[in-house]
Structures are given as structure tokens and as C-alpha cells.
Image (tube, rainbow, N blue to C red):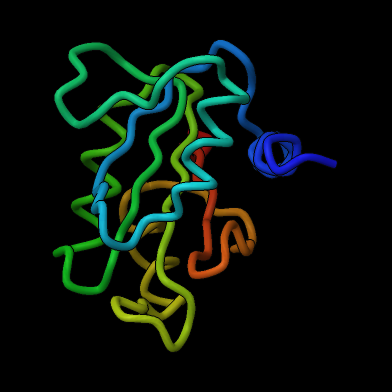
Length: 137
């Protein structure tokens, strides 16, 4: 399997699909996983859009570290960027890495923001991801 295939397969396992608009928030050139980003772009067939994107997205990719502010506020802001039925992937540094956030803090922020969370998964060498969808009303 080629490196490109591995990146695309990882993005597909996370649920990214061809044609999706993925808006990236919290990008920091120093610490994000570039292979994951590239795999998402290869899977969706388009570049990630940044915080200045003027339309709604299918997925928000939220890189979030302990010193990035309030997690609840970040998730509420992300909800406003989504198409109905959209998904938020909140990526946080793994335990022992700079910017680590306790999973219980992420879970509490999600509940406060009205989101349902799936079990966190390893998405890259240094990052854990939690997938959020709007809670059923």
C-alpha cells in the first residue's frame, strides 16, 4: 500500500467522503498532522477551507489545544459553520503532548454545546479525535 493510499484510507475510516467541504479551524503550522490533512484533501477531492470561508461546511475540523480558550465556545462556534447534519471533528493532543486536554473536559464541553460525542479515537501520531453531531431534539 502506498503512502497516499494509507492517508486516504485513514481519512475514509474517519468518515470523510468525496465532495465534502471541510472547514479547518485552529490550524497551526507547527503542530498539526500534515499527513491527516493531506489524506482528507485527497479523500474529499478538494482543499480544506479556512476560518474565512463564507459558506457552510459539511465537516468542521477543529484543532484544539488546552491554551486555545474555552472548548464549549469553540464547539458552539463550529456548529454555526455547519450544513444541517454536519459533523465536527475536534482534534486534541494526546496525553503527554503540549496542549493536552482531559477527555472529561471535552465531553463536558460537548454536552454544554448540545452535541453528541462518539468515543475518541486516535487520528494521528500526536492527536486524538472526537466526532460530534448535533444532539437529537
